[in-house]
Image (cartoon, rainbow, N blue to C red):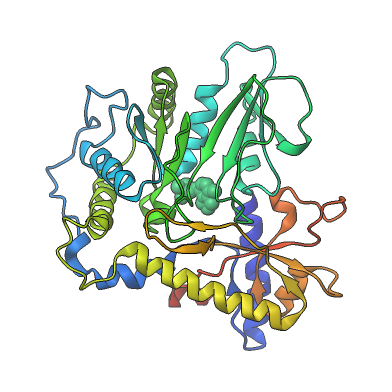
Length: 386
Ligand code: PMP
């Protein structure tokens, strides 16, 4: 399992680093703790209190296809999308999941025909989010299988293409690449929020995945949601989650609802009487902007690396004209360095190598030795003691 391997690798490096007195900077995990300060400033506004007698039942709303979806959470999701303008919610079913990770698996289950003679192919254009191949093949399903880089998928067979936009790890704005009739699309829009990228139009796809992990930064709540056009697909995704975990934590949904309401209140010109406090998206935008400026300046000065230039547009939400500033940086070695990852590690910086994202060092890919680094990561003080 890659997380274990990564952690093992990190701690062995960490141990020798501790010996020579240097603390490593771990940029391998995309943990959104950079948002902690903002939420601290919000004080008790986002505190959720649940007495022991409440929310005991498995059920939330038996009239909904997704019967474990808390109505308060659904309301908060719809309101926030409307205010931000990043997705159409009208005519969509909402399916809540334990992170968008569970919804990804639910979507594969729902979209693969149950009685096909061979597993459905699952593709995504490289570089793709490193967890997709792991999640797809982990249980060796007979329904679907990882078929790699969408650019190289030439078979005339049914497929599911994952379209991640902005993309993890390189921040590119994406459209499907295979574009054949027998294809089904899943849009992973985890980063389609105005602190990362200009919101140019409300996304209007058949199956869209979102998560609080990247929108508000509450990765530990493990809450994601899918906006699903087709009723039968929503039903099957719900069935998957029912069999997998008999629903999704109500405590987490209520906490997420409260947090999303506070984010929405900040965006809502009517609800927010004041300009006194910076809104969550403004605050996060400024934070990302500052970090990207610093990173680009450092990269330029070093002459050893480059980071991609990303698309620039006007954001309908903020009115700002800006270049996508992803939660990750896709760093490419330009100089003499043989292996970017080893080089950075020797400087006590732990990263994730390009091979995890479907970019092989030996192939004729344009990107040589790319490395994912995560500029927003701040380790909590306790986690520095590896
Ligand atoms: N999709 C993408 C593109 C991601 O980067 C991540 C998290 N790194 C996820 C999905 C999973 O998020 P969650 O915490 O909601 O499971």
